[in-house]
Length: 457
Ligand code: IFM
Image 1 (cartoon, rainbow, N blue to C red):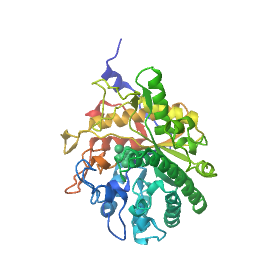
Image 2: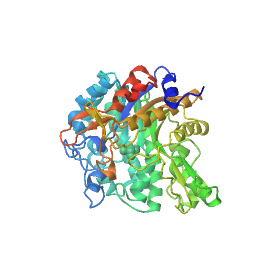
Image 3: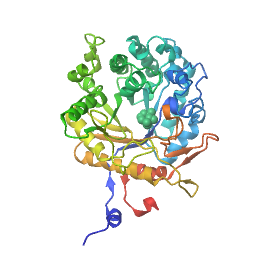
Image 4: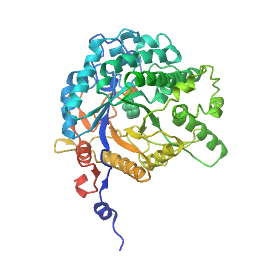
């Protein structure tokens, strides 16, 4: 007898994750910290970019954001209540090394020192990322990522951070989503520093890769016990039609968006046909660079949100019933499972973690004093299911971190899109866990995903 969809949902057995699987959340410095000009911190490119007319949809900036610098102790207590096992955050470079120079600012490092100690006291693993897009403006003034010296400066900054904090960190992440730093920052101009040159974007991409490699060398030498990671974003692409033009365009977009960092790091070098396609002469790639970049990493962090359908002439229009989040991004969980299997097949990285996955949703329904975000809950659960099935297929997945712990400053979109599993009232700074947070907490505490009807009750 056929079972109805809802009956089959309720009768599904739980998905149990391997012992030690890590459940946690992710944030980044500029998006939540606030305190942008205290204790010796100097402006980052985002402090400057947000002041430009029209740069941010709602004219906002990160001056206050979630006031995490002030409220970190309560925030850590909240994570502990939720039963999270890891917290991925980033360090603001210009808090640690004002002006990006060689002078270390102990007062800036004090904040991360306190944060890390509070996390460890609660049994939460701190997972710092050294760079999540907030370059010191002083370095941008010298050419930013287009200037090779920025990669060397990043290694100096790495040394300062790892020397002070490294005794308590088991995994260091160098960069977050370098594709976005190079592309949105230097090619499309929609992110800081707002430049619009393909050639500059290409130079930036190589210097970001080099920065990862040079930073990794310092991490290995100063904290040989800790693991080395990088976090990359992947947006699987599919051609809109079977036409040769669509397939060729898809191929190059895949190389640019999904392989420009993982290929050199994984030892394949840059995709040469696409370098030619994008008219990059590779003059920035000096002898020895690719060896530095391809030194082994211990963990690849994967940020996944959506897929892209590509047509050569940009004519593709998705069917009106395509499910989307409030950013307009298609919701397509099977692309995550496929991506994980493909990455494991192509590269020899020893371990993977979902370091960001989540969705901005309307958050309009309130029940029992909190946002009843069944749509976000469904989104996360559907993606977590894909992770489980990849594990069953032998992909070495070690954890899942939801983006994001809090509603926060969503870059050029300002505070409009809400990605948090915890609601933040930006006037009062009150944090209220949403229904998805309650659900995620139960998953984290039990290490399994259930399919009970009451998940939506
Ligand atoms: O908010 C961002 C984050 O900073 C990087 N990854 C994507 C998120 C959602 O756009």
